[in-house]
Image 1 (cartoon, protein in one colour):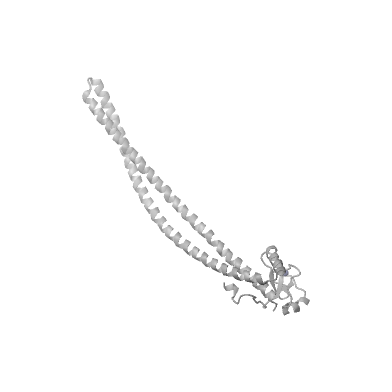
Image 2: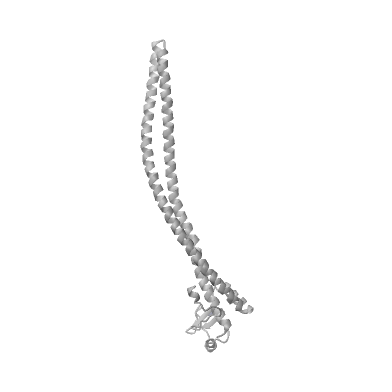
Amino acid sequence: MLDQLKCLIEYQKIEDKKNQLMRSYEEGPRRIAELEKEFEYFEGQFFSKNEEWDNAKKAHREIEQEMEDLRGRMGRQKTRLNEVKTNKEYQAILKEIEETKKDVSKNEESALELMDKIEILGREVAELEKDLSERRSVLEEQRAVLLRESGELKARLDRLEEIRQQVRDRVKPDLLRKTDFLFTKQAGIAVSAVENGVCKVCHMNIPPQKFIELQRDENILQCPHCHRFLYWEGHEGYCVTAEDIDSI
Ligand SMILES: [Zn+2]
């Protein structure tokens, strides 16, 4: 069989395999990004719950501070009560003390409500945190698997590239130029088998007078319709490697 034809068949095999592996290779980072995005969603939920919790604690501290101030105020009001001269002033301060007491009790109520809220939020935050840490481990595991797979794919692609270069070096420059042109213009397929009288890629009939020529593998023929290089189905052969390119 013509060495150049074997090279073309091998070149096409390599390109097919390369495209197939590239798709998986490009899928890896996409999948990782997807998993990270999903994780970030749960992380966001945790952050916002945690913020809600912090805000409740802050509000509680403010109320505690306010009550401290009110107690101080009441102390001063009681001192003034002992210093007043008239009954009218005395009554007025008693009234002020009553108001302060009301404010204190209102704050005490709010403080209790906040304590309940803080407790509930604290539990929710803990749950979300636990869930998040589990999700983080799963993400790390999946990422590691994907990265390993990606490394394996890269090694296979490198091996293919090695053979590809060897094939390219062996194809005569003029033929190589035509082949590369077909790869770009004909959706990545430059070489096609002929089966049952038709080009397997464009499915058009090949003139019967070409059959004998094709079967002899003596000339490089092109499909009259799609211009791809043709070979007789079953006559596959490689020029460079003895490896089965499909199993790389
Ligand atoms: Zn064709």
